[in-house]
Image (tube, rainbow, N blue to C red; front, side, top):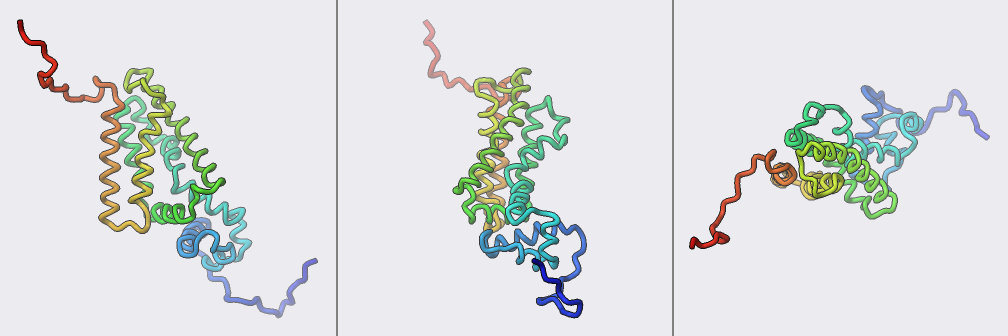
Length: 238
């Protein structure tokens, strides 16, 4: 049974401030700040609403709850970024040029993970121990599987065209490219990293992308230098 508040009774608490711009974006950014300051468990929907300056029902008009906000941050700044880049169509021009495709994809993914909001979310993600929970591990594993499947189709096409090596599965090659980039992110692209650490991470990511491309392309496509014969295996002249 609900009791109506009398018309002359003022609502307790401070009045909600006027919210301008994209309310959904403000909710996400405010929630991220609160997750970073108080932890996921220590942040309530009420706190998020008050910080944004809207009612709790205003939050539920955009999200099912706190977990939905967190999942949205995960989708926008976490591993799903790789999927976004693959399906965006931005790389279609390089579909038959694996060297350019891989370099461009790698640079775009690292660029997205280097954004301030993405670095802040990575700190929250690591602090919350999301990988160590059944729910977090399941979500991450599901995204990795999707990336391997979708990205693997590009490698399969390049294998059929003789553009990349075919002695490993497409899914394994995806793993070999993305996993080191993810490690760079965990170690260097988070909110606590200083500028020197951040630049170290970006340099490592670039070197990995170059190295991976050199390893995965077939020799006649990679423009590799010929191996110098040291003469140790030469047969003596008779």
